[in-house]
Length: 190
View 1 (cartoon, rainbow, N blue to C red):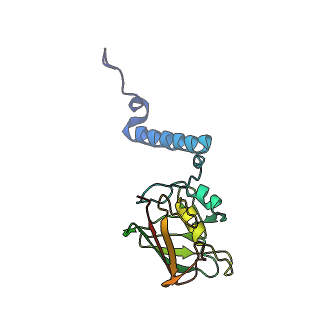
View 2 (cartoon, rainbow, N blue to C red; view 1 turned 90 degrees about the vertical axis):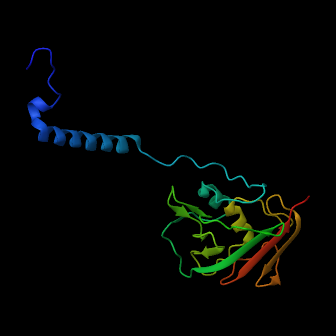
View 3 (tube, rainbow, N blue to C red; view 1 turned 90 degrees about the horizontal axis):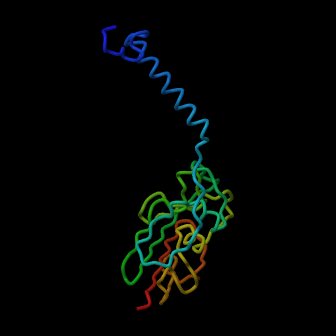
């Protein structure tokens, strides 16, 4: 050793190749300890609060809270049910179309979904229930979306709420039927 100089840690005994192998082994060990030792799990979901704000409305991040509130069972992301089908939902508030976002009823963090959910932001809603006899409702869909929905209101809009299925007037809590096109129109109180 040269006077006044410290040897480079690990290189003296192991050499450059051994040093890299030792660092790789240490990294794997620490990664394993952190993963196993910490027991990394998703945080507790936030409460399912139904929004009364103006659009646009995104899909709730902690979807499991809304899945529970809507009365659905939490299903694995790859579940498709015995008779899956789709329908279309269009929402208009104050004469302006509102985008139905992707990810309604889907909790990617926990790898769970509701039987009713969206994959894309085009209003196509998937129903993948455990039984072909299950008929989820429009009210359950809006709960999954995290929006207040009553016979007279959608979020903060509470004037002239109308619902049609395939251009025929239907009740506010209509079932989500295969190949249906539900149109929800409402005005805000101003």
